[in-house]
Amino acid sequence: MQDMDELYSEYFQTVFKYMFCMTHDADLSEELTQETFYQAMKTCESFRGDCKVSVWLCQIAKNLLYKEYANRKRRIENSTNDISIDLQSKECVEKDVMAKETKVELYQRIHSLDEKTREVMYLRLTGELSFRQIGDILLKNETWARVTFYRGKQKLAKEGKK
Image (cartoon, rainbow, N blue to C red; front, side, top):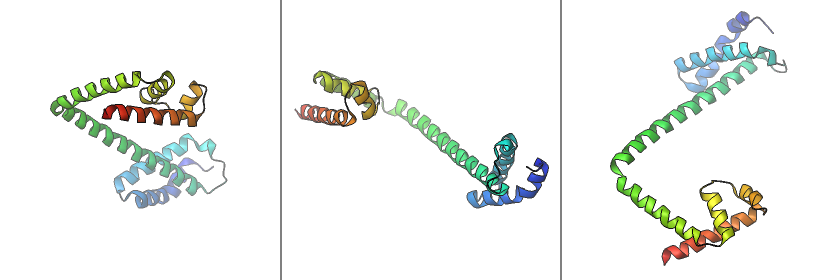
């Protein structure tokens, strides 16, 4: 592979233009282009040479862009969660109390189900396990776990209407 200075000189504009087309943001494009060459320098020995260097660099840049978008999305979700938690704690204390009482009632009704159905319900609701995992744990198949959970929900719904 070429010397990194030569590589940078030759492909900087190509990668920058590619990033600018993807982001329409010059500052972000420049930042990602710089990071692209840094990553390329760290992993240059993994370049197999089965594509053009410009393609390899643009692929690195695209992956970095996807990571940046994911990080931004996570930051937005976290700040939104923080705001909603703050609002909830200040304004929705009554709803929290009601939800907890409802949860207690739900678990009391689940406790009245037969043993296998109760076990499936607990694993699904509190353990957040997939039906396949539940089937594996209870030495049954995924369909059995799915049907048992559905029937349990139906029983709970009937009891809730009473």
